[in-house]
Every structure is written in structure tokens, then in C-alpha cells.
Amino acid sequence: MEYVYAALMLHKLEKEVNEANVTSVVKATGAEVNEAQVKALVASLADVNIEEAIKAAPVAVAAAAAPAADAPAEGGDDKKEKKAEPPSEKQEEAAMEGLSSLFG
Image 1 (cartoon, rainbow, N blue to C red):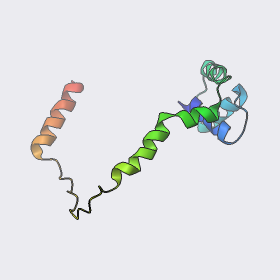
Image 2: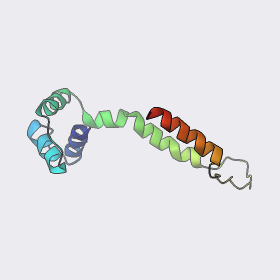
Image 3: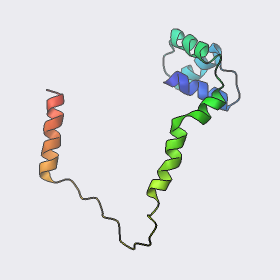
């Protein structure tokens, strides 16, 4: 994932997305660089218009839709929102049992 982030950062800074630049960015983060992954990323991005890919990403649509979900419903209801109640002891015990079954 750090390689993709490095490529996006380079694109944002209007730098060339090449093996040397991606390697430099990943090294600057303190992560180990896997040269095969760097080569694969650069090769896969060779024919990609990164700006168009960003615009077409479904994340942008989901982020834009989130504020609409928070908006109050039309109709002028003055009802106050219900506050979330803390989980009961039974709910906590059930959650712990579920976790314990995962880890033995």
C-alpha cells in the first residue's frame, strides 16, 4: 500500500512516477523497499492517467454522499436525536465470548 501512496504523492507534487522516485519516497517513510513491488507498480502505472483514475474512484462518491446522510430529514421535526446507550453487561459478555472463540 505504501507504494501506491508514494505514487499518489509523487503525482500530487507533479514529479515523475518512476522506480527511483517511488523508492526514495518509501525509504523516507522508514519502510523496507521491495524492488519487485516498485517495478510492478511503475509498470502497471505506465499507461494509466492517474488524474482520471482519481476522479473515477468510488471513494470520492462515497465521501460526497456521507454529508447528505447526516443532514436532517425535511419536514421540520424538532425531535432530538436519541443518544447512544452504553452496551449492557450481557452485550459485553457476548462480545467477549465471540472474541475468545476467535483466539482459542
